[in-house]
Length: 305
Image (tube, rainbow, N blue to C red):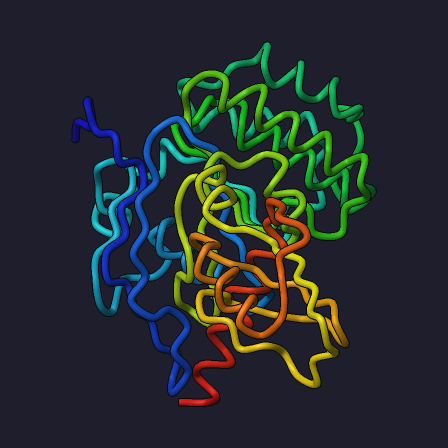
């Protein structure tokens, strides 16, 4: 299999997945170009791990298609998976091995294993090669897993909730390693997280997933530029959130309200003026604010429907 010239590292189209009566993925559409750090954002149970298992060929698509690095991870596992580095959320490593033994074991599977890179990462992460896996903390296990996933210089690195249970210093170490060893070399990182500040700090592009559906997807800068956080002040106290078309959430009390607007603000300003209000502050919202607004608006609409 050749994938020369393939720009779409991950191509998911119309992917749906049911477990019994539960719809885990609902018509997921996702395209991840080469050379990006791509963050998949969602609450626990939103469908992030289920989607990742499809990318790794652990689940066969019930509806839709999945292609990774130009191939089908289910029917071409050797060709596809040999080019993917993966760190699972559960940090499943053999407890009886020492760190050095585990890295030597993994080295045998990958012709592209870079011994110098593995040693550098191990030193950067302050890992004792003679330490047994069973004696490691959760953060140390994550670092060992990351060394194993990075050392053969994969074309695609997939991380499922890489910061689970880690302290902030370790989280920064992991993110720095991702940026330094993958993104700067033009390869691709796909990681899931419910920590939106972490995603905002490192991702080039993001997809927001809620209850199995992609709510929003695109370059992070464009998503942020396309949304505004507006502070509105009214002449009189408002007993309930003012109805302003074009906003996805409006919160506050009395005369002061904050709205998130995913488009031009002119219509919002005109409507607010009709209610005796005006925009007193216009700022770029955080990814967390955008996610809360989009997901909250969607759930509110589904309840009303």
